[in-house]
Picture (cartoon, rainbow, N blue to C red):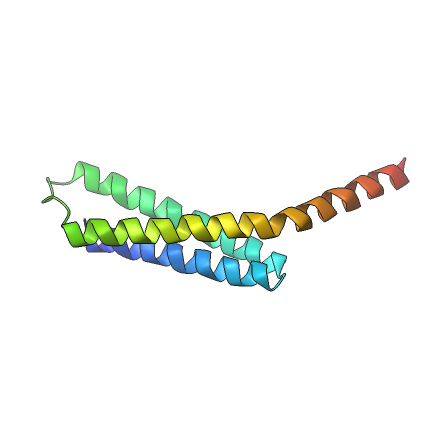
Length: 106
């Protein structure tokens, strides 16, 4: 695996950990901001992968790099699951607030 690609995965993991910390603190505006950063990083990663596909053949990924990528992906998924769990009550409250506003406007 290209070391630059691993750097993208690490940055996504860091942003996901920051999102989790913000969610735990109830800072949902920060969670949304960090989610935007994750989207940008993922887009950059996809672009880097696509650029690599058109380049000369690369040597196979090292076992260490593959393991590192796997560990990073697992941590991102665990963070995402906890963020979703923490967000459920907030999203329900937001839905209720928006529904109440809709009723008062009519």
